[in-house]
Structures are given as structure tokens and as C-alpha cells.
Amino acid sequence: MDAGADSHAEALRDFTRFSTGSAVWLALVGVSGLGYAATLGTSDRQQVRLVGLVVGAGLVLVALRYLVGLVLAWRRDLRSVSLVAGDRPEWASGGPAMFYEGYVSWRLVLVGLVVAVLGVVVVPSAADGAAWGWATPVGLGLVAVSLVAFVRWRGNEYVGVHAEELRMLRGGRLTVAPWSRVLYFENGQVGIEGTPDRAGVDGEVETRIRERAVAAGLATFDARLQAGESVDLGAVTLERSVLVLEGEPIRWDEIDSVGYEHDGENNWTHVVVRGRQYRQRAKVMESGIANLPVLQEALRTYTGLRFADPR
Image 1 (cartoon, helix red, strand yellow):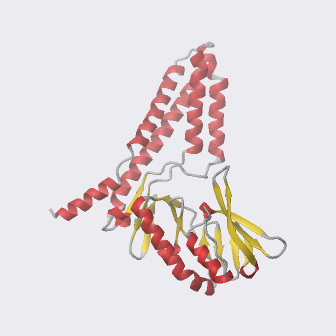
Image 2 (cartoon, rainbow, N blue to C red):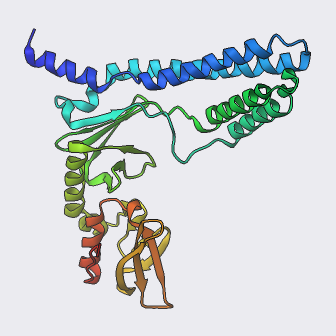
Image 3 (tube, one colour):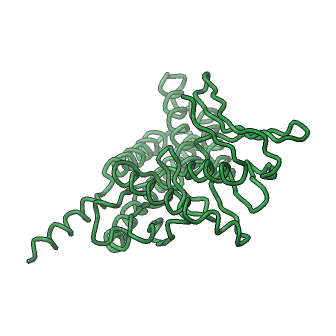
């Protein structure tokens, strides 16, 4: 067996290691559901017994659903992650992503609240006033709310750096984008123009993505604008005649000044653009801007203005 092939296969296996922590957490939730059903499901009171069995079984089923999803995603990644990593696994990063930032289904929130209310109002009578009669349903009600309201299986995500392109694997779907379409955010997030998804990166992979995305953006933004395209930079969009900040357009020839505004209390930094007419002013959080040097160069090219972080 070729030693190089063995090393490559070992690197890929390490890259797709199973998320034991997530599996243990889900198993604990399932065991809690079994305990809930076993304790209250044997009550002499029919109403309490019904609620205990339904809520306990619900927790077990939810835990099993996500545990099966975790295993299936891991098995799928073992087969497909080589498409992302190519022949350089050390230039790729990724792993399990269980929590979906910024998205909560209101229907699931409602289900979670109903579970919590049933636990608090109905179940305590089973303990005849004992302290655990309140603690158990309240605690498990909160677990139910967190499960059904905030846990959204997103699947695993992987990002790979290649000479001419970035490859991103999410939920078994491979997306390939040239470097001129790659968005790098200073908080260690990477995305692709035209898609809302972002993936976290760090270390050498983050450094390489930053260098290549910024270099490609600087080399192509002017030609793209002259061709009538828009250049997506996250919270900022470059267009041929206007700069758009969080949906607020300002014509290039009307921009009077640009600079930074630091919020010491929240430790936020905003990029502030002021127009000449009507005291026009727009600002965006610096962390929401992708490929920041491209914005700086566009402002210098089309307005002659320069700005640098004073920190």
C-alpha cells in the first residue's frame, strides 16, 4: 500500500471525525424522556399519565431523529468530503453544525411553549406538592423548548481551498465558486455571492481564503462594475453608479466622506459614509462587510477617498 495514500486517507478520516459530544447530548435527552415517561406514566391519575407518556415519548423521538440524522450525515461525509478536500486535506476545514443561527420556526416555538405549559400546569399534581413535581416538568419543559424551537439540523459543512476555486459542502450538496465570488468576513466566516449561507473557518485555511478572495476581488471588481454587474460584499453592494449600504444607496459622486465609528459600550465598529446632499448618512457594521479591502479600493477609485481603521 502506498504510504502517501495511507496518509491521505488518514487525514480525511480525521477531518470527518464523528461528533461524539452531540451524540452524547442527544442520548441524554432521550434518556431524560424515558425517565419522564416511566415516572409519570405510572401515575394513578389518567390526565397526568397521558401527559407523562406523550411528553416523554416526544423527547425520545426527537432525540432519535437528530441522532439518526447525525449518523447519516457522518456516513455521507465519509463518502463525499474528498470532493472538497481534494489532494490537500490540510487546506480544508469543517465539521458538524447542529445549530442554525438566525432561523427559528414559529410553529416549532409554539409546540415547545405548549409542552412547557403542560409540564408546569398539569404535571406537578402528580407529586402531590413535592418539590420535584415542579422541578421535573419545568426542567424537561425547557429541554423540550430548546430541542424543538432552537435545534435545526443543518448537516455538516466543509470548506476546501483549491487553486482556482472554493468548494463548500453543506448537507451533502457541493457548491463550487471562483475566488472572485467568494466572500470573506473578518469574524472568520466565509460565504459565496448569491447565497445566504456562511461557514466558519480558522487557522491556515482562513488565511488562505482571506488572501485569495481579497486578491481576486481587487483584480475583478472594476471590470465587473463596468460590465453592469453588482458586486456583493455582504452588508455592502457595489454598483456601477451607486454604493449600497444595508439597502441605502448613495451615488459615488455624492459621497463626501467615509470613516469609522466605534461603539465602545458594545465593542462594535461601523463604517460610516456621508453624502453631500440632505445630510445623507449611512452606516454598516464592519463585521458585516466581506472583503473589506475591496470596498476601500472601490472608494479610492471612484471617489478619491481613503479610510483606515484608527484603532
